[in-house]
Amino acid sequence: MDAATIAGLLADPARLKVVAALALGAGSIEEAAEASGLPLKEVALAARRLSRAGLVHRDGHLLALHSERFGAAARAAAEAAPPPEPLSDDPAEDAVLSAFVRDGRLASIPAHRGKRLVVLGHLVRVFEPGVRYPEREVNGLLAVWYPDVAALRRYLVDEGLLTREAGVYWRSGGYVDV
Picture (cartoon, rainbow, N blue to C red):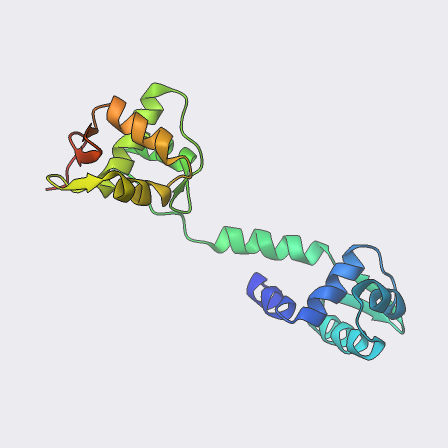
């Protein structure tokens, strides 16, 4: 069974509650109904559908969750997923960025200055050269990356990647695509 099929099965609130009840120790239709707050008939229907899909073993009123199938589906989905696109053409930079950027957001600000410079150099590309940005707009652009916008602003200014004067910022450093 694949992860998409499991997700589809669990998209139904009743089936999700039955799986949760079984995962928490319910061992029968009656126990699952009590734990989930669902009527017996609804639990029985959900259990029958989950049993046909191979996620639940059903023996009369007794139920057992095949929890190992969730892990197997997750592992198979992870193995089948295409490798992530590199964040940089430079393998060393890509290694640093891959360690700190998750799903298009900065997971943490590197403590090591060299790594921080790589991350900041990547981040500063959201600012167009020659454009002046009010602080509110800078905060909005940086908030997409990381919640502590003040720290990012400070690092970008301290490293000479942004310049600030009278509450207005502009890009003053970093690599520029031509």
